[in-house]
Image (cartoon, rainbow, N blue to C red):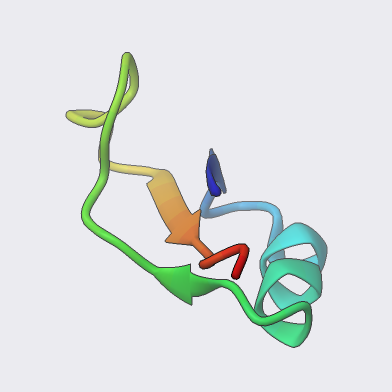
Length: 44
C-alpha cells in the first residue's frame, strides 16, 4: 500500500512510521512537489 502526505504534517508522518510504513520514492500527481512525502507498506 502506498500513500503520500505533506512534509508539514509531522503528526501524520509519525503515525505512518509507527504503523510500519517506510519512505519510498515519490509517485503520482504530486511527485515533483518539493514538500511531498511518500510512504509504502507491504500488506502480506
